[in-house]
Length: 173
Image (tube, helix red, strand yellow):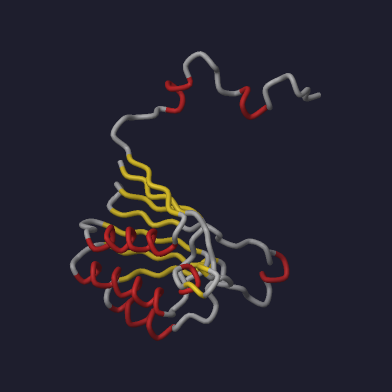
């Protein structure tokens, strides 16, 4: 029986004496928190433009609207420069994608993987098995993660501010 005066079970596993030995924190890493989609995507575009080895992108919603096309063209440009580019998107969250655009970019070297596309048989048994991750990894040194999907609604504003707001992180090191 868990009592409120005890450590919760998940915290009890970490000894209090020297957690740094278990967690292995290291100096020299940088974390930036974005609460503006525009600032986050500006930083992502800079990281993409400077990619030298690989770009891995995973997202729930990938739209082929203005922002989505701009991002896909940016990674395709790096692919043409010899950078390995892999994109994973959720089949349900990203429905309505311009498949001709993906096919063209695929011919230019961008690898696309559609996560868990629904089928007549599987859909009945696993309707909730979706990929809600939102990550961009560049050269194994810079990572972005958080709640931002790839769509205009994450950067555009109306009279009340951003049409959708979510936090995102940039981690380097």
